[in-house]
Length: 280
Image 1 (cartoon, rainbow, N blue to C red):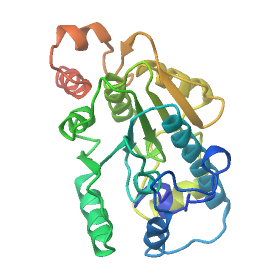
Image 2 (tube, rainbow, N blue to C red):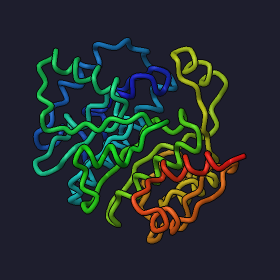
Image 3 (spheres, rainbow, N blue to C red):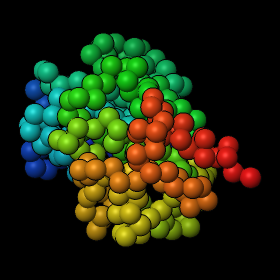
């Protein structure tokens, strides 16, 4: 895949053909990895570095999760902060719908490039949202996401660049649109070195949120998910009950029953904004 245009310090990694396991060496039933390679060539290469090696491992893991979930009959795949990722092109599968959720400016630039390359993207849906201020769940609904159908949500290389309250709002919104059979493949960064932080700052990104193993588990639980957080790549499942929606520690915690029942029609974003407005 190609990373987001800014995430991971401007690093881009190619996933086509690199995956081990079920996805090794093929593009899916109708996918086209050549498109991704042509897109990669438009961006500068950083060569082989420790950071690039980490991203390749993460790419292989998420590729394998995607293919396995498609094999297990999950019919919707949502790429959160999709950037210039090409999984929707590489893993095109009859009967599987791909939805890309990202900033409208990123969507526009990516679609411009793909149009220049003559790539047909009419089978891909685009949901536009600025995660800081917009309701990602509402954007998915507007793009035609079916909340009654199992979905694989891919959240790769994003959370480290968001403040914790925005992370909670985003992951909770995804949980609100997830069936019990849905899954979320998410990368949750551990502490990063000063060198890494300086490198991404040089290209306009700033690290904001890192979590220990226990903190990552608690974060998922707050948002209605659970998964093995012993490593930073997590395949999470929805919890049976959404026990709590919590804003960060500076905000009051809002029980799930309040925003699901006491605030009919409200999203987690509405609750978070309301909590902020009520602060002295």
